[in-house]
Amino acid sequence: MRIMSFNANGIRAAARKGFFEWLPTQNIDVVCVQETKAQITNLEGDEQYFPKGYHCFYEDAVKKGYSGTAIYSKQKPDEVIHGLGIPEFDDEGRYIEARFGNLSVASLYLPSGSSGEHRQASKDRFLEAFMPVLRERAKDGREWIICGDWNIAHKEIDLKNWKGNKKNSGFLPHERAWKDELYGDAGMVDAFREVCDEAVYTWWSNRGQARANDVGWRIDYQVVSEALRERVKSWEIYKEQWFSDHAPLVIEYGSA
Image (tube, helix red, strand yellow):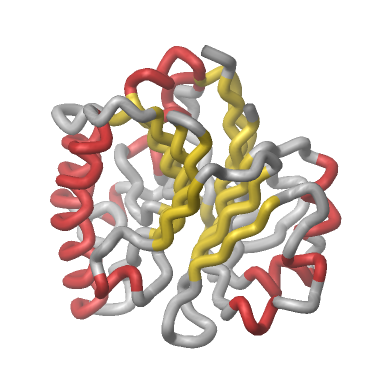
């Protein structure tokens, strides 16, 4: 089972850069997209946004051209869950989940706090509200794969310029402590780190020569339940073409 997480930074922009021509060559079972920045009414009638061979589901933000998530799955889900039941963040289209038997695959776009104190406050409210949800999921008996842009680099290895970002959103001490809790007492697993201990990144600023110099951050994660820890087989961060300021993260899971 191959699962992809991809922040498109605008699904229409990613389409113009060739994302939907590339996708059929990758044999992905479930694609989790974040930051679609489009309403479903803008996409209907254009078949590229509903790739052949996939069941496609979008969760839009109320605000046009903002946030939004999506899931494309080869297998038809038994159920699709829209939102977390938290109005502030559901209005921003930050979560969609597809259920396949006992497995749930979700696409998550966690808020960024980089644009100001008010957005960091929103991000902190999300973290506070989401942790109890994650703790419950870790023990509910289901298998979880929560893909997305989590907007937090967990450890120093997860960003190039960690010394210069200690006071910046995405690497703040309380955000990193939240990730410690997630992978500690909360009982969830960073799937990527089960198979890779290298300093590799998934996002690069568009400023300066960040991409050319590989001055990046690993903020795109697949967070899984304990039962899936031993089933993580391999990873890929695709950088041969650029569809966004994020690179697609693909993780392969073995069968039970």
